[in-house]
Each structure stands twice: as structure tokens, then as C-alpha cells.
Amino acid sequence: MKLRRDTITGIAGLAGCAFFLVSSQMIKQPAKLLEPGPRLLPYVAILLVAMSSIALIIKGVKERAVEEKPYFPKGGVKKITKSFLMLVIYAIAMNWLGFLITTPFATLAFIYDLKGSSKVRLVSAVVISVLVTAALYALFVIGFQIKLPAGILFE
Image (cartoon, rainbow, N blue to C red; front, side):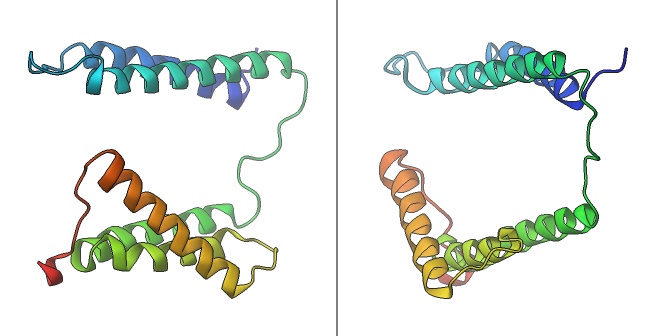
């Protein structure tokens, strides 16, 4: 019996959940932390990935008679490689220029990279890029109280 990609991905996801569940037991926390605090986040993530993995396994078993399409359409490997290189460039640029300068430009580049054959207006893309940057900044700096990179050039 040949397993579908969905089933294989679900099994791999459950195996990863088991690994991270065991690994999360080894994390030492200071005794004065308010519970559940930061100890809860890994368990929530593991639960969500496990639920998604189970759903993929069920989908794969239900649709085992349906023929699968090729994983990458024509030119797909080239597109994924380009997107990966954009992420690497973004990470390097953020190290030098900081989060607030690089993220709007990176978001704009990713919008145009992922648009496919759809038409995207420049004004809409710029507004979305600025809003995404502001939301991420607020989430990390205000919500999680995590300092984002300011960049080597501006320190």
C-alpha cells in the first residue's frame, strides 16, 4: 500500500510532536514564574501541530484512492529557491538595517513574489506592508516584550 503525502506528513508531524514534547520536559524554569506563563506556549504549539497532523492522516487515508498531482508544478523548485534566497537576504539586511527598515520592503517583495498571475496595486501592497510591519512590531515589542533588532548601522 502506497501512502499519500498527506499521511506521511501527518506521521512526521506526530513524530516531531513526540520529540518536542519530550524535549520540552527538559526545560528548566525559575521557581518564581507565574504559571502557566512561558511554560504553556510549547504545549499549545505541540497540541496545534498534533491536531493538524491527525487531520492530515485522516485526509490521506480518506483520499487514498484519489490520484495525487505532482508536488511541484513546472518551475516550482525555482520559485521556492527564489523565495528562500529572499528570506536569507531579509535576515542579513535586518541584521544590518534593523526590523523597522527592512520589514516593509521585505513584505512588499514577498507580496509581489507570491502574487502569481494576480494583479496587485502598488498602493495596496505598500499599505499592507506598513500595516503588517506595525502589527508585528506591536505584537513583539508591546505584547511579548521582545526587543527587535535595531541593526548594526543604527546602534
